[in-house]
Image 1 (cartoon, helix red, strand yellow):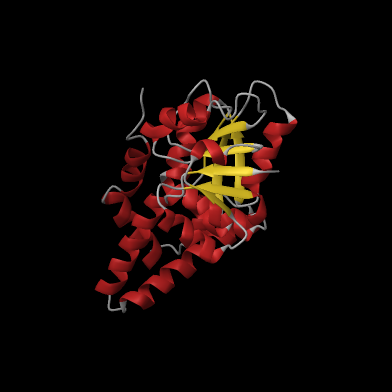
Image 2 (cartoon, helix red, strand yellow):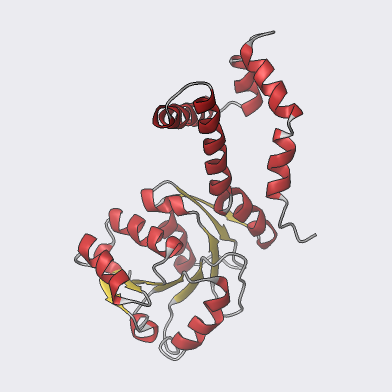
Length: 250
């Protein structure tokens, strides 16, 4: 399968790194505005195919990933439409919030795809085809995927695409708290990251609901329940919900 990624910025670049690490280097063609960006990828992955001409890059592709800023999607499609006129290539968008009649598959990954730990939402099609499944499988190489109906894609964007930044903000807040309590910044960071890994492992391995897991580490009258209650008094849950619903169009 030949894959062309148009745009090698934050999200496009993360996908390229992830797929190269998954062994798809020779199947990839990537584009960028400058040779400098392309040379950076070639230095890491010598077998990768590169181009600055989008129309040229999509010729012969089976899947075309449009990974540019949302306001550039229409411009890119206009650039490549003649090259794809007699092609069966699937157009796949990773541009947040952009739905276009000419796009075949709309997806919402997050930047952790670079490390094979992404979470990608894929819009459910009217009809499942072998080509569509190949796109799902492609994103599954760099993390987990969920197929959801159109109406849930924005929720997926908030939970996954934007959500990774929300988690980073939590990490930063925990680090700041650790420093205030006397830990060195790097020690605080490592402790927070390991604690998060432990929390994820606990939930995944046990299958517990988060509230049940909380109960298992919360002693009546102890430190944990006092800390949890203080966070709630400061608006922790409401702040998270407000962030998730900030772009709710309803």
